[in-house]
Image 1 (spheres, rainbow, N blue to C red):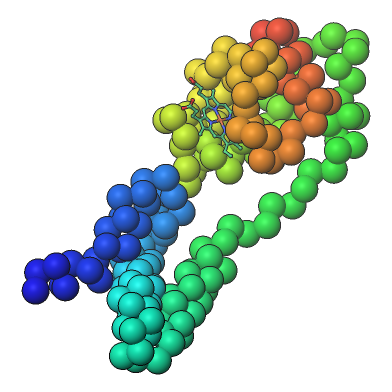
Image 2: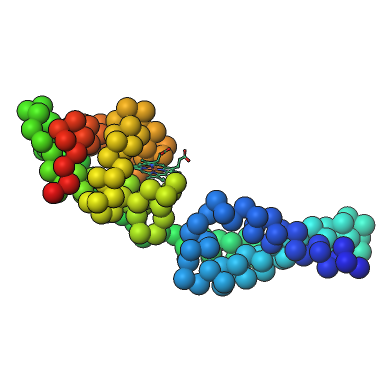
Length: 183
Ligand code: HEC
C-alpha cells in the first residue's frame, strides 16, 4: 500500500531533486504554486503510466488524457515563468566604440554591454557562481576574472546565450587592459 502511495510522488520527487538546476522555478515569488503545479503534473503523468498496464490488459480505456493534462500543466508553467524578452542592444553601439585608438574605456561604455550580455545570469535575480556584475564595485572586484572568462578563454557568456559580439569582447578587453576603470 505504501508503494501505491509513493507511486504518485515518483515524478514530483524527481522534479524536486533536479530543480536546483532551474532557479527560475524556486526563486519565483509564487514558488510554492510552481511546486504544487509541478507535483500535480507529475502525479497526472504517473497515473497515465499506472493505467497503461490496465489498458494493455483490457481493464480500462486508454489513459492518455492523464498524460495530456500533465503535459498541458507543464506547458502553462513554461509560459508563465518565461523571462521577459530583453531588448537587443544595437550592434552598432559597440562597433561605434573605437577600440583601435587604444584609449581607456569608461565604465559608462562597459556597463550597457554587461547589462545586455551578463546580467541575465549575474544580476539581481541570479548570481551564477556567486558572481554579481550589476554594480561598479562588483565589476571592479571581478575585473580580472571577467577579462579571463570573456576575452581569454571566451567561456562567458555561457554558450554565448546572450549573443555577445566580437566588437563587445574587444571593448571588454580594452577596458581591462587600460586599467579596468569603474568611475
Ligand atoms: C547563460 C548564463 C550566463 C551568462 C549570460 C553569463 N554567465 Fe558567467 N557564469 C555562468 C555560470 C553557469 C557560471 C559558473 C561556471 C562554472 O561553474 O564553471 C559562470 C561563471 C562566471 C564567472 C566565474 C568564473 C570562475 O570560474 O571563477 C565569471 C567571472 C563570469 N561568469 C563572468 C561573466 C560575464 C562577464 C558575462 C557577460 C559577458 C557572463 N558571465 C555571462 C553563466 C552565465
